[in-house]
Image (cartoon, rainbow, N blue to C red; front, side, top):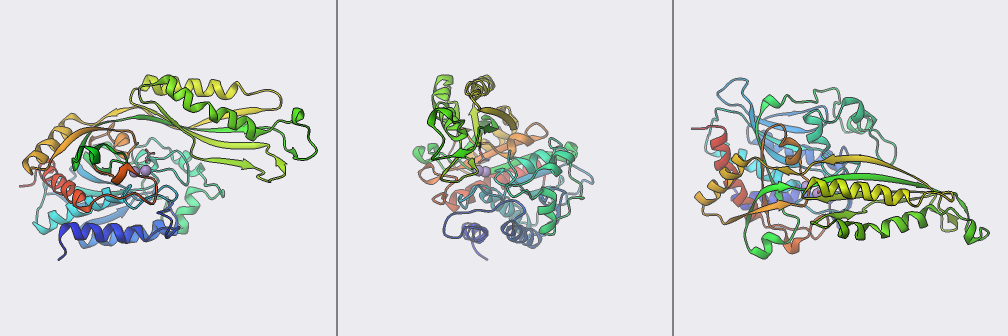
Length: 409
Ligand code: HGY
Ligand code: MN
Ligand code: MN
């Protein structure tokens, strides 16, 4: 039997094979063939570790180790397994793999918990295919209605339901989960920043997660001929969008307090080199540790966008996602620190600038997170890398924590 670190490396390497862009990072969009391959691997491992495997009506995967208490709420451990385009191998899978190996330790030590243990692999956390993000966790707790879910479609117009069926998933399965069936949720995630590496500390206990919103801006102008349309008679949607986008970094700096604003996705129509663009659609991702700064930045962004209306330019803004800053459960944070100390694993407190499924579930159950260092602080890129030894450290902390939370003897 491979050592824990080697098993973790094997899982990560195998799951990273399931990408639509081999050699150019991980691109594993929800309900894609790559999703299906990763899903089959995760379910196989759940079976190997003696878990009862099921999927819900979103395609979230659950592997359950029943406890001695009947109909008792579960201690859930897990993360997401979708990716951003050309992302890394660890964002999401590190948390799913760590959870699998906690179940592996329960099996190895023949532990029968009182409260059930559930390993979860969540879908569409990144929102890279259907927009918004945190879809699997939001759906699980009823924040995403069946109607809203069914109305989501990707850039090619393929709906969530169509895409699910294409890989053999059943959208008619139960979707919403009664919060009373959850006792706690633990998530390991890579830090995706430089702090732990700079501090040379292998474990971060997450205290709080920034608030975030994702806007989608649609700028309309007038298409025209690039050669025959005088400059003073144009309603160029791309020039207008560029002027808006160019002012967003200054707006974030003006708001201060660590407020960040990012335009990561932009589409130009009709996208012809000799055609004046008549429509531009772009995303605006706004985050801050305190809600008032997120709200201020949203208002200022909307005002900035509308200030370019007129002379044939019209803009509309849709809010795809809004989540308040979240403090994670104090009891779980204390427990994670105690178990780290008992295992003599160095740790520090840290806040998260990235959003995570734990921030959704924290309103419905006791949620806690651990971070491990990201090499050079890089993430959402092929260079993303974390040390499997650090993942193994998190497995050991989660194992001791889960033993206590499931009140296993
Ligand atoms: O965007 C985020 O913070 C996360 O990676 N979905
Ligand atoms: Mn993630
Ligand atoms: Mn991510």
